[in-house]
Image (tube, rainbow over all chains, first blue to last red; front, side, top):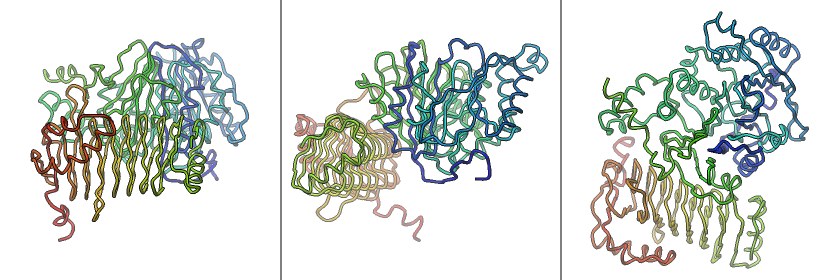
Length: 389
Length: 245
């Protein structure tokens, strides 16, 4: 197709399937259940992309950042490895294990590196380890042709490709990994090409996000993110979600619930109806973060280490179903997807528009679960704090 | 005829069912259903389909006469553009239920999702009926052009609203009944006029509520003794002045 990676420059209408599962006690399971879940949603995708993110899979190297990188040329690999050895201690590197699959064609070279930022380098630059990794990922993706970092967190990894998700799971041998949180995506590219780096999940540090929908505010979000050092190189809309989460939650310190209210902000007419404190908070969020509002239909599942969240936009133009069984939280585009992971859920519910479902390892309380007492759109105490200023 | 749908793709499942209907089969029992789309679509006549499991999207789309009973939850777009027949869901149902529905009945024991009854319509002898036993999400009856939508609110959690935001937006036909109190702010007042239901209104919905209750062994008389709110369109051409002047 002229440019590396644009294997199948097809354009089709939209669909997409999402699934996620999390053990609230941190119990780790292999990738077979999540594979089955996304496989049952096969007809939501069209074979032009899919992928997974898994947390807790590298416990023996949990202190190092695990970089998953795809290369389309040897030069890309040489250039990237020069950058890595310049910026980090590369503790270990290896090919990502794969197994041939007749439906996964022309894979790029797939490598992973476990790296540790050097203290002297961080001191010299005056940045945190995370920000140094962020800068290096942006640099490689934007400046080195044909090299794409597609995973850069600790004790987690993304696995993605062009193909159907179940074939991608087999290709990456996901039954050989054990994680406490898994998210998955089957893709139906809406307005952009199906190519390897453009498959979901989109990641940065330990953030990963899978998305069903399309983001009409992409241009605004992208320009806003550029002011904070994020460069969009994956040629598709969902990439901005991963960077917005990093900016809002990690760097600006917003609670996850509040970040969801930035992405899926309530309408002004709804804000007008809120009590005083809440109204001031939501007005401020819309004013400060207008450029981070994600417009257009979406259901997303996103995760970071120890946390998994499902949320739709404010009018719920894409589906999302949640379920609990014992100490597990499940999310999927369809209830059928949940029942592939969990035969007899204790509770199945459909989250309301814009109201996140949040699971956290170490807590049996799931935010947004009916009857959990945590159903409020935003914690009242947050609104209360802002009221006093 | 019994079909085990485990690991059966919807095309194969529906092919077998269509062939059997063509051969004169009237009763189907589908077991281990999980996510298969388009079950019961486009079939005509007095066919009964009993589904164990969770059927996939577009259950009973364009259906013209059959009866479907789901012994569990249903997903999105149940009864899409359905013409006649009855679909009974013992659990909950998802979004866009009864979209563009032209006739027949959708009875859901539990709650229904967003955009239920959008653009339902009635014509001459055809009057589609949707009854939800629980609550409904946002955009209930949006652009509703005809038929009957009833929300019973039989079970709901503390503080849970019977209907969501933007109810009756663009409504220009049909009638919507909600059992219990509704915050008027949720109903798009420029389209739907809301008032308490009167005796003659209850006489209109009575037979439908009775049919619903018979499916689920509920006491219709008790339900009909409750207070209902009635939402009906203010205008048959709500956008006339906006676009057609």
